[in-house]
Image (tube, rainbow, N blue to C red; front, side):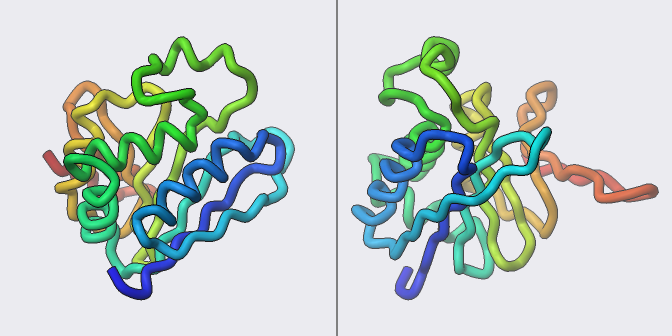
Length: 164
């Protein structure tokens, strides 16, 4: 993915070690990456924003993260877990939670307006499906009851779509 650039916006209220580790993961995959600390508003959840320069999110996820592991979903999971403050691949999310301040989630966003929201409690299946997902613009979250990515309705009368 020549010319792809990633910017990681890290909440200033959190220690930056996880952000720099995730930044290094992408650099190892040959992606130009910059990590910037952003101010946090009082009362706002602490989400990490990962902005990618490609027009759509799916080719980025499948191509870049397959460079980091046997398969793209494992690479994506490793990257997100690093940002969420997991000490290593084998660590359980609940065990890692006692380690101090961590972000509430990771939002991967592309210029077309697609946002995928990754949180601490996502199962492996969410990462597997994210690799194959070709979402429209909007914010997408994992629906554990339907085991699928679902768009967050954007306003009154919006129709909800989902991707299995």
